[in-house]
Length: 252
Image (tube, rainbow, N blue to C red; front, top):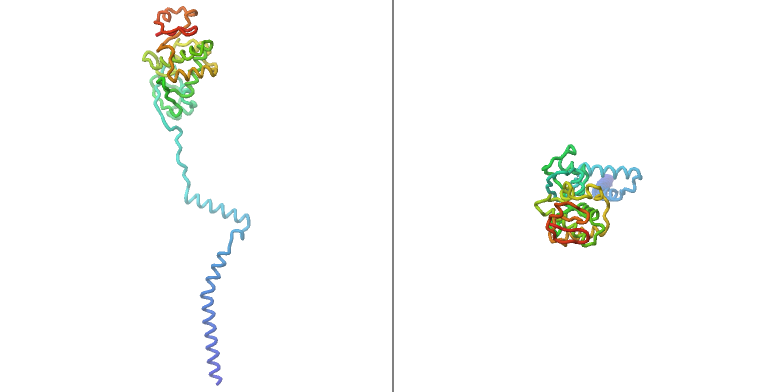
C-alpha cells in the first residue's frame, strides 16, 4: 500500500517537472520579447540619449561618408586673345571676375600678360546682340559710359548713333574686334584721354546703348564721327560724310 502511494507521488512530481519545463520553454522567450519591446530611449537619461545619438551619427558618417558633388564655377568657357593695352584687370572686369579668379582659371602666377596670349574666360554672362556682337553686362555699361561722355548733350538719336559707330568698328576689319580694343585704341576717343569715360552714365545713355546693340544704326554704317565746328582735323574733314545728327558729322 505504501509502495503504491510512493509511486503515485513520484508520478505527480515527474508530471509537475514536465509542466514547469513546458512553461519555461514557451513562456520565457515571449516574456523576454515583451521586455525587449518595452525598452524605450526614454529609459535613458538626457545626457545618455545625446551621447547615444552622437555615437550613432558618428558611426554613420564613418561608414557612409557623404560626398558633395563638385559644382563647376562656370558653365561655359571661351578663349580670349590678349590685345595691345589689355591688362588682367580689364579682362577680368569684362567677364565679371576678380583678377585673382582670372589668374586661378588660367594658372597664372603673376599679373604679366603678353599680346597674343590666349586666356580662358567664362561666357556665362555674355549675351549675343542683334547688332552682331557679344558683350557682357559690364561691357554694355562701358558702351553707355562712352556714349554719355561723347554725346550727353546730343539728341537721343545722336547718342544711339555714337553707340552704332562703336559697334560698327568692332565689326570692321580695320579696327579691333573687342569693345575694349575699340574704346582704348590709341587716340580714338578723347574721353579716354581726359578721363570723362569713367563717369557714371545716365539712363538715357544706357537706353541708347541697348538700342544700338539691338541693331538700330542711324548712321548707315559710319565708322567715324566728329564735331566739324570744333575739330580742325584734316583727316576727319576729308572723310566722306554719311549723315549729320545734332553737332556730330558721321563719316566713313
